[in-house]
Image (cartoon, rainbow, N blue to C red):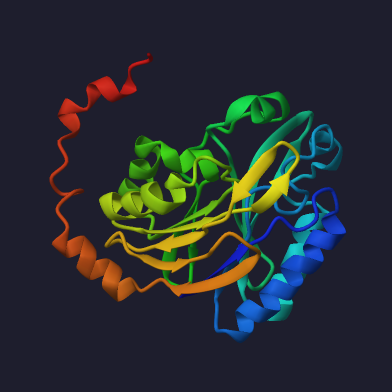
Length: 265
């Protein structure tokens, strides 16, 4: 399945403008044969928007989801995107996957919040594995900091995730995550990882771009630079099956010796 990575920060604070950016990118991605478009963390509203996080937050089935569903249906591809989700009085940093027919396939709430900004504005989710079937692949969802916890990604591997979709707001000086950590996560867990970042200055943050589609062999199938960009790469189930057959990591695990992993420091 051809996968398009939309590396953009859009216009922070303007949902309408960001939907237009998403619409334009969906058109370009569909024309290039993509079946899935992935946008960054908090793409619909912007990331560094302070108190506007709570003001703008919407339910998973709100007007924004309807607007994204319309874009997905019109262009004939699935879309994964980040947004602030309101559930009653609680706000989550969420990512949602919507199919080509407008059906909401999966909604994930970030489980590992990064820094004071996120902990001040969001509640962490408590479901580590959220998946959906799309184009013959099992798609898993995470958000940014989540992928930096090896246990988190390994749980997805054990649950059969083929493509882990990771909307991201990765900032300077942590660009090594995109460059090194993400390809290693793909290799050690035998999956594809689509890590899709924001870019440029936003509030106190400087986002580093470098969006990556990494394969199960640890090779980047697509990698963006430091600017606004739409990059495409293919998720190949044949290569994935062959790689899983050749790589012994998951077969050679010894869960009985991993008890200390659950201890609190």
